[in-house]
Structures are given as structure tokens and as C-alpha cells.
Length: 171
Image 1 (tube, one colour):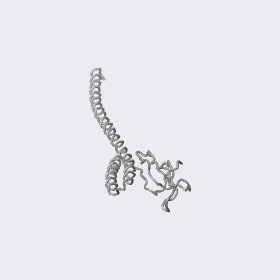
Image 2 (image 1 turned 60 degrees about the vertical axis):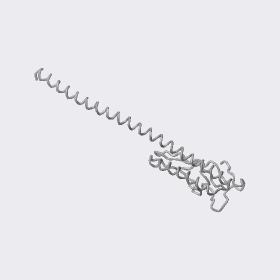
Image 3 (image 1 turned 60 degrees about the horizontal axis):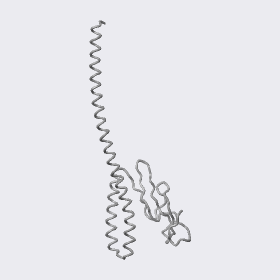
Image 4 (image 1 turned 180 degrees about the horizontal axis):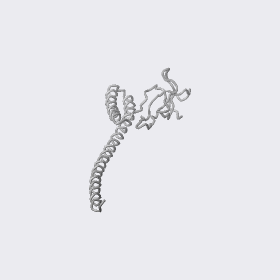
């Protein structure tokens, strides 16, 4: 093969390589832009999830304070109206979390204790036959599960202690 033909082939290969390089640069640019957009979306989702979690926690605390305050005043109608509003906010926050693949862990009263999802932080005396020992008496802090990671709900359990007159006892 002559030197001239070899130089021509090398020139065509260099043009081909340059074309491929240009295509790679375009793809890298697109990938970088898509990654930046994905990171921005992930950050926005994280902020929405954190806000919804805080709202759920605030609703739990607000419900307890409303119930205590209104019962002291004896206004059950006001309790019902306020409880509905707080329940609506809690439901709204729950829907936001579900849309972001976050599961709220909020066990019902008398639910069986699940050590994988609940953390016992106290115990109270059972006051009726429905209050089975080892079941949930109340939820102090709602739990969450996201991407397989569980942040356990903090719960008060019904115990079997004969003393305490229904007051919480640390476990």
C-alpha cells in the first residue's frame, strides 16, 4: 500500500473518530442535563417528603393538645370541628407521602405490637378488657418507611402492672 493511500485512510479514520467524538460529546451533554434535572427533582421530592412528615407529626401533637384543651372546657362540638380539620391536614400529608413512596406507620389503638415497625417508649395500665397487654395504647410519634428503611413509630403499650393507676411508666 502506498504512502498516499495510507495517509488517505488515516485521514478518513480521523474524520470518523472526530464524528464519533462529537456524538459522544452531545450524549454527554444530554446526560449531564438529565442528571442535573433528576437531582433537582430528587431534591424537590426530598423537601416535599420532609415537609409532609413534619405536618403529620405536628398533626399528631395538635390533635392531642386540642383534645386535652377542649375536654377541659367541655365543648365537644368544638373538639369535633377541630379534630376534622386536623384529620384533613393529616390525610393530605399522608397522600403526599404515599405519592412519594413513603409509608406512614401509625398503628391504631389496640393494634398488636410489631417490633419491626414500633418502638415501645412507655407502658400504661390496662383499664378495660379491650386493653390487652402488649397492644398499642397510644402513638407518641408516627413512624415512616421509605426505600426499605423503617423509622419506627414510638408507642405506649398496655401493660400488666397492677400499680400506676393508668399513668405511663417507662419501660
